[in-house]
Length: 302
Image 1 (cartoon, rainbow, N blue to C red):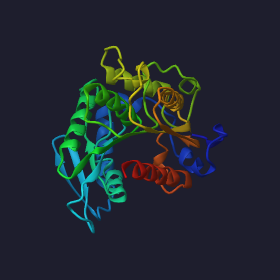
Image 2: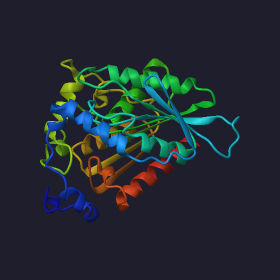
Image 3: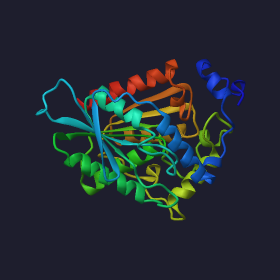
């Protein structure tokens, strides 16, 4: 793609955009090939696991910090939900991120390897996420009054849906929800979604993603949280959007609706960035995004 097509692009991201192909639904039309490629990528990522131990429990991967601390002191817990358009992604692909969050925050992290669409359409993934939250709340040494959820993209949409579901089912209670470029609205009618070509993600990809996830059924508030009429009583939120992201406006709108419902919200729309900008590791804006996430979660989890 030609970075000159995006005048507001952060200049440091121009080389990354120049190396990208135009967005298309290809990955979601050839899921077996895409999943194989992502599995190979996950296996190739070197991870510094210093200070962290982990184990797989059912569909979840549980991380605990180790080191110079009182083992009798209970820790806060973070549920981590990966992205991937509801069809791709895994805990293995996000292993480096969850290890770093566990170590940097000093909390127990549970990453959910939720079932993927279209083989397992809604509500399979959300039920897996709720089961992951129940697991986190049941672990020894975890503070049930300090449980948070974080998700990116489709994982952000699942995180928002889980906050609604946990509220309506009476628990486990969340003290915080962190929504990074969340996919919230299956209607795909916002100005940012209809604006035209951007460096990453597209209307066509978003449409295919929702088709796979919904599996032919109508979306309700737990499938697409933007459809929820009542947002009162939800946990405080940290919402991140990217300027050149088709999902930008649904994130902004949801944050404003949370505020209107009396929910405390910290909203940060990062200028000159695109969906999935975290691939540009080492750039100033990505470093700032990652640093801010850790600071926000540390403050909220105590």
